[in-house]
Image (cartoon, rainbow, N blue to C red; front, side, top):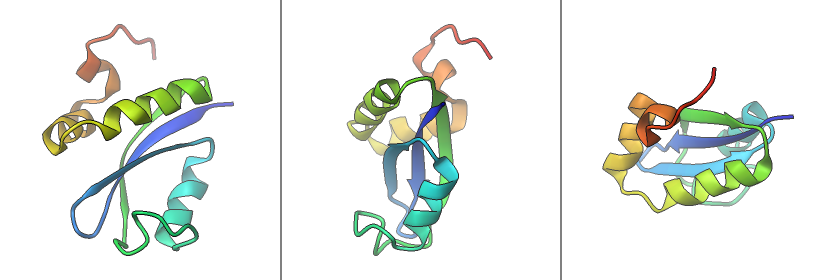
Length: 92
């Protein structure tokens, strides 16, 4: 099983970051207002970034890091990806 960290771009151009084990379902839930959270009044939403992890804790740790970042740093991540951004050796 894999877990994902994701970034959604909201209709007001803000970003929402979260983690999940079912990316497609979670994005659908955000877009359909299933959960009353940050994205509820900012629909429609667009998934702009996701990264796969092998454990929930890794995805949660990534989410917590990303939530602390400013907009420019998030946009750099969206453009270049996790491995490039953090300059880590990643195996694909």
